[in-house]
Image (tube, rainbow, N blue to C red; front, side, top):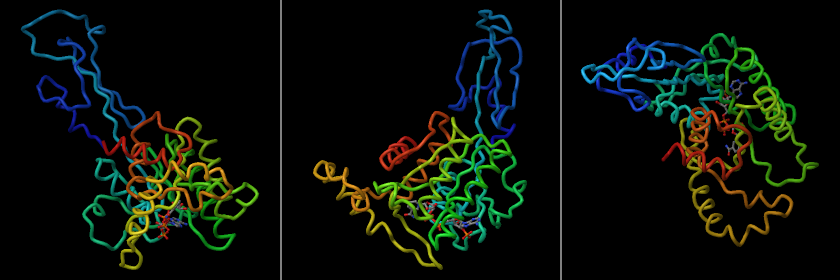
Length: 302
Ligand SMILES: NC(=O)c1ccc[n+]([C@@H]2O[C@H](COP(=O)([O-])OP(=O)(O)OC[C@H]3O[C@@H](n4cnc5c(N)ncnc54)[C@H](OP(=O)(O)O)[C@@H]3O)[C@@H](O)[C@H]2O)c1
């Protein structure tokens, strides 16, 4: 989170961070500081103070909007969650993770920069994780029997969305799943019904800031019991092949369930960067497809 320590740079000294811009060359009164929704606003307008040309003055008029982000990643120790935590830390975003296992055991440097809370989303004391957060990112989901899939893909996320809303968190980002072009009457598995239930909870509680990402197969290096499974050995060539042949196979994508074979895989880093784009860009909300996830990732990578 940005601290008051960053503020002296907006005085009369010539060192000006890129988030600041000069509005007028002169101001008469000291800047005022506001703190609203985890953002600092520092302003001093010449309209307020009366603008006067004075080449001897060495003061400047600065308007600054310093946005400090603190995100909570539900499932930050998992495959996708850890990529999100790592990407967020690299962008200077403060990160708290909640998962039952808590802090992962591998020694990567970014791990030390995350606050790890061990807890179950159904029983956690939300005061410990949500207070002061600017966004919640949920990677909660997975497979099992029908009951388990409904619970972790659906109910767990509904609980999280409602907790976030109650605590006044302004943004909720949910990692959902591509529908694979499967006819709706076949999408009855607890995995998909759970995901769709969670999606509608996000979009109804956060109509103008909720984000639903719908990736297909996600590849990267998945850690299981101290070992790395290189899913990119499958994902990268498949993604390249589908990209190279997209003009030929596009007509096939109208066939029911064809996306099981034709939906392009997406890298775990792209999913993580699309999340970061969502955290930083308040105009980015709604449902995002595989291609849109890749585009959003590019914006942050650029
Ligand atoms: N991997 C893919 O190819 C893919 C594709 C499309 C969509 N998705 C979706 O992306 C999301 C993340 O997938 P993933 O592969 O990263 O899964 P994952 O590795 O299994 O991660 C799930 C995370 O959720 C945590 N978790 C599970 N139950 C919890 C609970 N009750 N309370 C708190 N934390 C809990 C897990 O930690 P603990 O077990 O320690 O609690 C883990 O950190 C899922 O929703 C999945 O459906 C994945």
